[in-house]
Length: 289
Image (tube, rainbow, N blue to C red):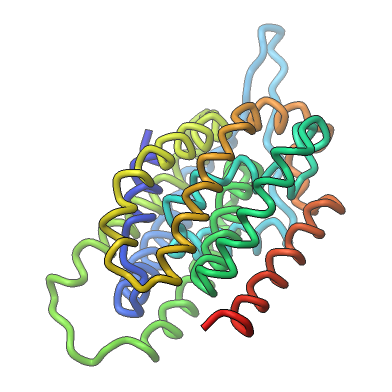
């Protein structure tokens, strides 16, 4: 299983412009190689039943290909707490049954989400949406990716690399590029895994979320205690949000039972939570010192 350790290591990578430029450059090259390889190999991605019937995964539409590309690029911004909070975020976004059967956990987690983005600022808001989009697209789109979809991914990664280079420091060492380049290759390899093999992506995502919760308690002192008071408070609320998301541990089975499991459009409640998080972030920018 390449995905779980890869996404955990990516969540620990420092979010600097240099790391972003190297990561996206590495991903672009790896995605181009994957597109050429998949086109030459002609993978059909079929399942054969006992009666001989074969089911083929339908290729994603243009919107699905763009979603795949932006989800792949957004992997750079994920962090352990919001990776652990993904069950709650997905439940709200798709309107899974757990959000209707537990009003109190929804209210508590929503309050913690608002406080975490208010005190955490833009990095917390960006990480929340990046984690949600990456993991949701992995569970719904990645296994249906075609070579053309991978070329969409190349375009987005190249654009992100160029943008990161504009803000990168001119003084850097070659050794600084080793880790982000390696993680970029691993990231593309984990995405390619679901194309060429039968993988239960939703179970992988649940495993990654639970391991990320344990990781959050380990890295929290190292990453948050030394920072300013505002960041520390935001980190505490984010840690509480990650812990509260354990209530939604059964999200993968609820996701599988959806009538359209590959449908990415948000529910009305998901839109409301997204607007609420954005308003909480703006209030934090205006009101908190």
